[in-house]
Amino acid sequence: MDLCKGKWLITTDKWFTAPDGLQYLAVWGSVKILNDSEVFGIKTNRGSSNWFALVGKNGKEIIVAGCQIHYVARCNKKPNTDNVSDWTADSANGFKEYKRPTKIYLAE
Image (cartoon, rainbow, N blue to C red; front, side, top):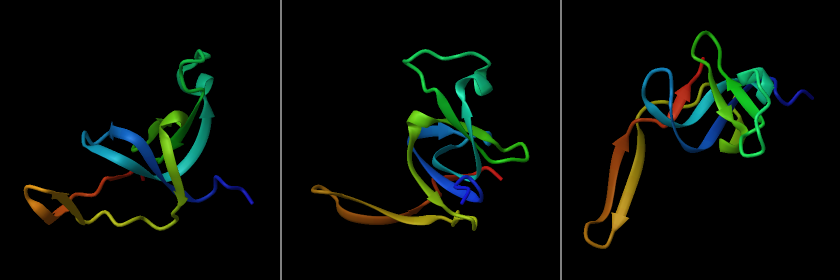
């Protein structure tokens, strides 16, 4: 079984800015794993990531450093990108539910 075939939903450790100028915590699309010399044309040092995930196609690709990948889930169907339910809670204001935009960048 070729594990890289199909589409994947990758959750990152930190927010990133996608080609659309918005910030996200996850990216969805086809994935190709690259080594550092394929991305930058140089061999990086031990303080840098030495592998990367190229996610997406058709001019919407992004490259995620391997050290920033937190979770990966096979997700062949496009994930929900409608506004989603979220919540906050604190002692002063109690529990509050609200809708917010998705945190998933569609790279295809």
